[in-house]
Amino acid sequence: MTFEQFLTILRARKWIVISVFFSVIITTLIVTLLLPKQYTAEATLALDVKAADPVTGQQIAGYMAPSYMATQVEMISSQNTALNVVDTLGLAQLPEAQAQFEEATNGKGDIRNWFAETLLKKINSKT
Image (cartoon, rainbow, N blue to C red; front, side):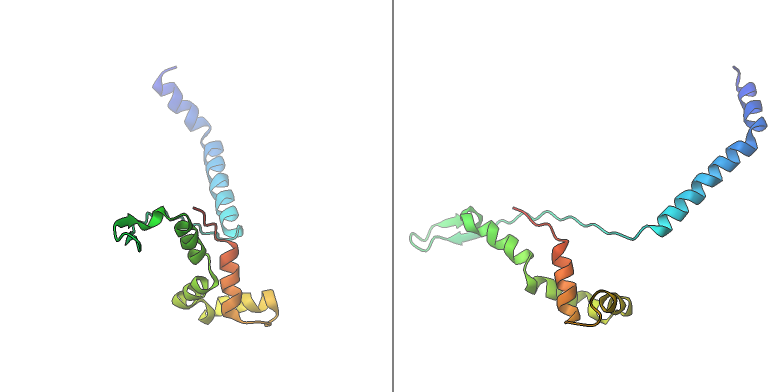
């Protein structure tokens, strides 16, 4: 098959090609608009903490203590940290967020705590 024959075939089938192209674009657009928005973030932390041994006074790496990483993970997934995130982002003041809170809880409870709990349910922190 020569290139000229290939172009002739495409010209003969141009309406099929155009209709398939636009149907794929329209279907993709509709699915994108109908699906709920979901955002995912991932962070990797490398902690290098140096501390002095209280008995000998020698420098030791703080992360060598078995409970150090567990404490850091606990701090990241704590209620206080989640409340700070809600306050920093100003989620409680957004009209859409207030409507979402009203719909989910019928206005019962504290909006800050509800957002913090919702945030903590979706956090996956591990050592």
